[in-house]
Figure 1 (cartoon, one colour):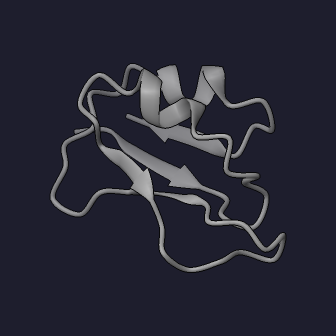
Figure 2 (cartoon, helix red, strand yellow; figure 1 turned 90 degrees about the horizontal axis):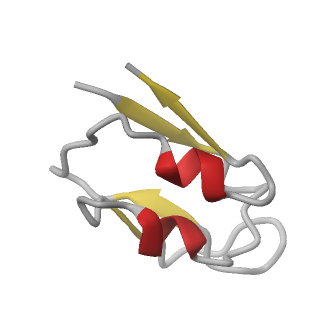
Length: 67
């Protein structure tokens, strides 16, 4: 099973990764990051396909996918 790593402090909250995830495994976090925005986080219990669409679409390269 694949895993994703999200750099929450680098995330600007554009939410593109959420709309491109085929499993809807990424959601908005309730806690603010250093930028003062709500970053994204991996949904607890979700299963990542490892397609890396989230990492490819992220304009700030905040997401890394590991298979």
